[in-house]
Length: 220
Image (tube, rainbow, N blue to C red; front, side):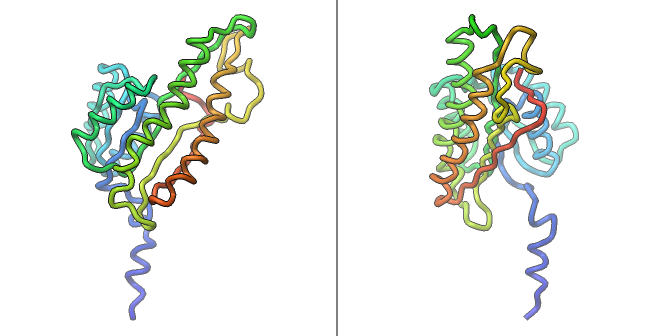
């Protein structure tokens, strides 16, 4: 029997193609999220970008669509709480019946003095956007990610972490002199562990996870 079909499956275009896939990128209007969306769209995927600022989303979608073979759409959303995540999920489900790739990229940081670090903006909001949104977005879209997924072509979730997740220094490059980003570093360490928890939970449904830690954070 010919081995040609096997070699066809091992080709670059077969192993790494995203052509025809549907992706959702939170925080996709700028920075790392916009770059990720552009990469998917230029390789033939249909991409939805979501963020709070509609003008920024419009500009990003228009820019990418000028040259991409895939198509970028946008959804205005705020993932700072469960209601915002649920609203984004509901709007996405109005437009698509399945999802192949979820990129949890939305993230924020906050810097302030050690002895005057605010609770709501410094801790609560950072943990809500950077950590809780990953849980609620993934849980709410798990059924769509699992639809038609199998061990050869699983649903994919990419969680954007940071090298700050393993750094103990809170007063450095990400904050002004005299300020620290204690909650940001902590939140990104939580992202790493949450990714492992979700991976163990959903692998049986053929949904796999990738924690990514860019060397330079775009979440300022």
